[in-house]
Length: 489
Image (cartoon, rainbow, N blue to C red):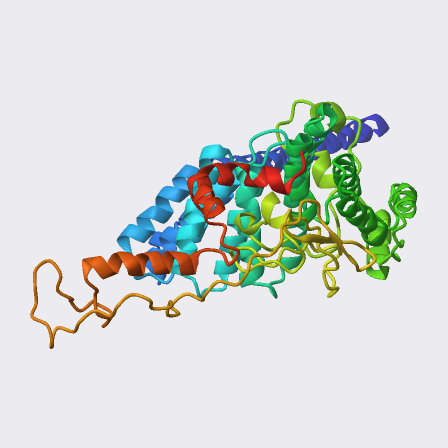
């Protein structure tokens, strides 16, 4: 009996286990079928642009689709969509944004051709929408597009000059823009690059011994780029050039500028010795220059890593020149075309250039309110100002000519007056006719005498007629040799 009961219980337990396993298998099978249904029967996405409840305008749909393409790297497709928007909806509120997006697309894609198209697109935006807030951004992007294409100092400098002009335009038009400090720093870096190019050429001629060619390049750097990192060396070479040319009055001017404007330079002790040997008072260091040089020495600068140093040899763009650029001070804001030439800078103190600019060179490197100190001037017919404040006569000074009659003043009338037309009948050969300015014309015989008198009145007061004629005949040769008279080499 006990064995029968135990067998029955065992069979019941087996049946219960079979039922439980069947239920579990069915549950697993149901879950698997549900998952497969979810995988192979995904719900299709609804296109919101074509939905019935969508009230978006078609121009906005085009704009959003094109911006999405540009954002995900499909630049050409995005530009095509933006151009479709511009052509189809010329009065759309997204017209300005579409034009700016096309320019940004070219700028983001990069490359010489694309950056050129970006510059053109940004300038078009500034022409069509000059009063929008984005106009400042467009002008800055024009400068940055040129900035990205700059090459090394010894290469083509076309892009660097264009970047300098565009950054200057941006800072002059929008001085209070939030991006003005960054643009100012980029302008310092561009001018560091330009100054480095002129310095290398000037240094080459300086070592070669061609003082005239060296002075032409170095004088541009000394007068135009006072924030240049090697300005003290430039001033030293200029002083040495004029000293070897037996013009110590001008050389001492440059040595004094090193002491005053670059007081922390290692060339200051030698410059002081030069001034003391020539018995010239040594100037005091400018406090603003001391503060500026101290700030430059303490300014943080990026250092190239071990990987970037070898790559800099094959990279065509500037590298180290941008690292050593000044971090403070006002950069040069005048266009390069307005820079003074060598002949204009060698004029006496107080002289003015044809453009109305004074022939003075600013000696304070920082962009403070300090006044330009001295004139680095020289002229064969003038004098050069030294640091002591006294005027030293230049070699070969010419005596000033006597005053001549002012233009339009009446010359002494020694010829007989011409008869008026009311008293004397008109004759084809000798009659007096009224001029366009209301004066009466004279007869041919009297005209010759009047011409002689006018020539004598216009001649110099010392009566040196021969030298005057000689000057007229050799005017072309004097123009060619005029600079040689100003510069002693």
